[in-house]
Image (cartoon, rainbow over all chains, first blue to last red; front, side, top):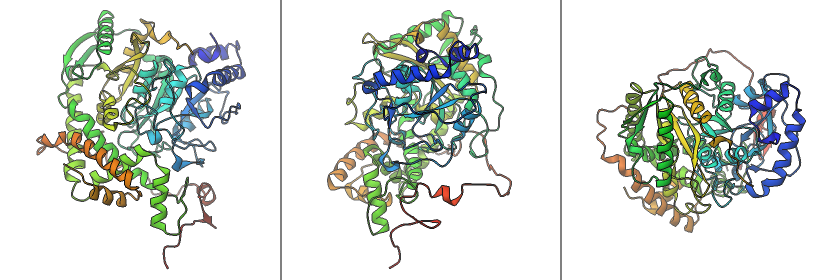
Length: 477
Length: 95
């Protein structure tokens, strides 16, 4: 195997044993990028010349192993544009807390940033100002989104590991579509300081990796209290690698019946059922459970997420950073800047959110949505009082074709039907590869646990992974 | 709940986004469909349910009232499309 194909923990072992050099790791990554980027397009602003990583402390823990960063996480001195025209040329004057933490741990910050749907608005990475990324398993298919660049880069071995962000499934769904591991931590587990905000009550940064051990390592590094994010929780961070015991005997797993209804692809269904059987054979106990308000999750999400987005994106007005349209009148300058700077989906979501918050509609939409959010959270609380975790598909289908859903926003929104509830409830979830369709597209298994029980996710995910071969398969490019 | 073009026009003004006539047409139709789907939640009885103002049990996060170092004006202005001295510069507001 080439160095760029390895997991971070394997590379770390080789670096420590002085079997390989960090330069060789970078050389392998750049050789791969040079060869396959023209097809995959996982990275943005790629001038096809190797660039040096941001400075870190390469003598500490991670020995300089590079991490690929989604284009919505601020990196001092390195363009961060959210794949939007309105942030063209934006060079953050500070690092996001996760970037500071990575640097302190000795990680290299990979100098190319990963493609995404503009402002993380999307499920396919087709809404990027820089154009779509392709799925490494089938170039005619989407990699999922919004962290599609991060997931495709990891799957195609153009990255060792990566960070994404997840507001309604934006880490887990692309991880599922690309056959890699993706974790959305508990809300408040990882600081959002320096993550360009989409929906502040839902956003979380998390890892996208080639195996569960790497996800556990990366989560341990980025997690923790940050006074700069008043929603981050002051709770100690466990050593997540200690959860990788391989022992799941007697764990109680709930299978929500509302997830196994119409809309789920038959092939996905049988792959998931097989995965559940595997977990049973490994000693877990599975039982059907009910999350009765599941059908309301997508509508509630598109009220709350767009309402928060409309407020968060008010800051992009051509005054402090990014693109500014020419005009002699201030209001007209705002309107033209936003008309020319935002793409279609961003406009749609800002308008929908503005509507839900506007006079006369607030009670009927926003307030009602917050109430239904309470019901969705209570559904999970009830199940977790009896069960250790919940297992579902990550997405109702494998990756869809590029262009298949772009004309119908509603259809696109429904592709996140299994991931959205988790963000609304604030709980953690992981997606791991659990099989392939006959067409050769990966399918992901989603495991959910109660708040701050990432250890349970790593334990179950790792046990499944170590008893299957799915995570070892590589796309042929 | 239906949404008409006049409402979308008003919302677009509130959101400070200029819409071209063809965009207004397209987006009005799309928002109409999305709201039709979202209206699903109007059937629920929510009389006794409290809104989820925060998903985790934390409240009133305060910090000590102490001065600390923040971005310098120079750094904060680095990305400004237009600036004068230590200020962001915008088109004239007062005639």
